[in-house]
Image (cartoon, rainbow, N blue to C red; front, side, top):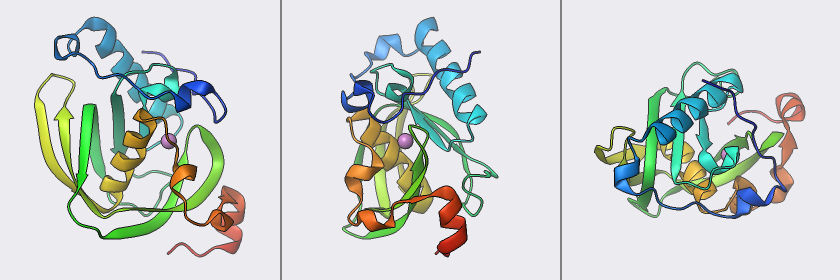
Length: 177
Ligand code: NI
């Protein structure tokens, strides 16, 4: 496995959007290697999610995992999962605001409103169909990664840019809500 280079804000690849993966290509060696490398990269940089566009591959695949994470110490765990060609639908209008960061926008955090609960459909890395409900931080991470696959970053979703802060200042001046 290899650790991949992560594109940072300003690189056009982050604004391009990703293409759907034909189902027969899901189990291909090439895609399986990309997935393994994405997991390795996410783990190396203490991310809770990573979309393929962030490693310069315009394919609709994202990986996520929330464990005891130094970048997000208070969050509930989400097992390692791979989402291919995901689609999401909010289960209600209810939104929640919380801090978000992004490996493509290092050191910054901002408060982002997200749907509290969503239905997620897509495929896993074995080509098995996925259809599940995600809530709270799990739903947030999926919405964040889904945005990447559509050429968006969390800054685009912020309603109030005055909450944008460096991580060090966040710890110093803001109380985690
Ligand atoms: Ni991100």
